[in-house]
Length: 182
Image 1 (cartoon, helix red, strand yellow):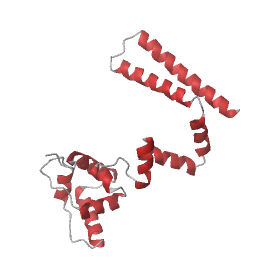
Image 2: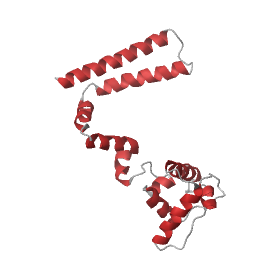
Image 3: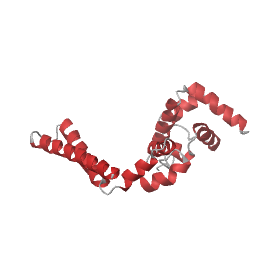
Image 4: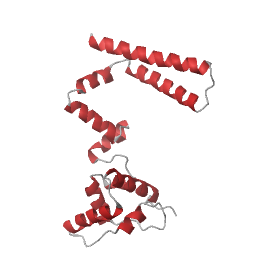
């Protein structure tokens, strides 16, 4: 019988969140225990339990709701992110991530552009009719370049196509910028 608790995803995401904060399992356990006691839970979390959660073993006991909620509050992520039921860490991004496929980092970059006054330029780029064509050219160049690196695309014709796509992308971007300046 397949479990709805995805041990591998929980292990990977919890370890990643802990490493992003540069915390040892011992330090994380102490922080989570502070959260648990602050919210009136009698549950405690040991360093061993964290190590167990971070190993994708099916023998590990699924974490309880109080621990999951304390972890999500501490890391400022949705419980569903830790469990692997959603890809957005931040609840405000959930709909955008689901609808548009943007990552939390992409959304943060867009928010940062707004803060420093670059959102107008970003919007103009997005509204530019040639942007899709430019992105397709860049994607084609990158795919050919990756194929060449992996030895899939044989020289010399692939190299010439790759070079042509690169220059095509540069030319499209230059033309797009020139049109935006008009």
